[in-house]
Length: 122
Image 1: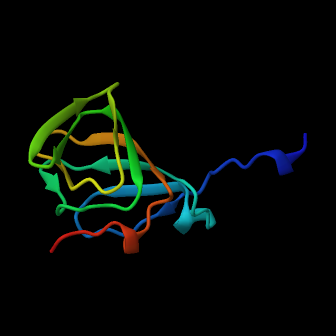
Image 2: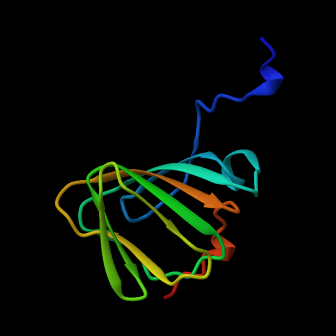
């Protein structure tokens, strides 16, 4: 086998958080320096939320378990396991889990997630 043709990620970069959310970036700027795309395994705890943001990247979310709420331009959208969404760059959005169970999901950003380009509100 030619291992130059693939890379198995066994040790994702665990993004430090102070809100109880788990972020394990498998591919992206923090894990392997790739600025084209990021792929992360996420777990949002019950009653979690983060501020509104207007990212400069597209974000795709696939819900594995639980539910997640998206406020997009003040419209509340709730996704459940097996559902997915693409939020275009330049869209004002707030992510949250106002429910009583954790939400496990995969997040893919193109270009890669970047704290300097997420544009979170205070």
